[in-house]
Length: 105
Image (cartoon, rainbow, N blue to C red; front, side, top):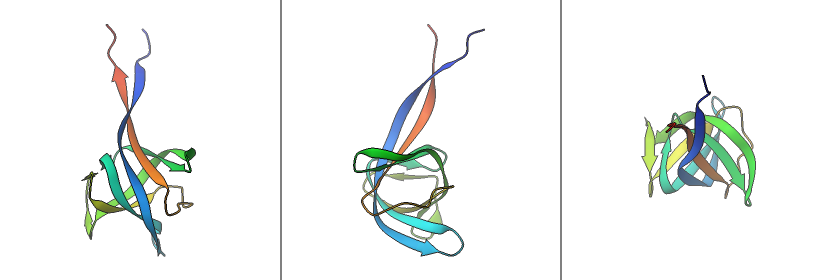
């Protein structure tokens, strides 16, 4: 049996506008979603100056105001924490994506 083929589908992008330090969570990135949506269960990559600095990361937290949310849409602000990656800087772009299975025809 053939293995399934997958393609990457970009869900959205958010620009990091501020970094907040937390003793419990590490660095919290204050972001503005500039296109699409950011979903909590999606994979993300960090882009700095046009180059990918980290890829295939998970979100450990996605919040809007004080509430945990599953997604944030374009035009809204959010706070997010990346699992196993703390080197975020203002101006970085966080790109959310998912891998979709390509149906065989």
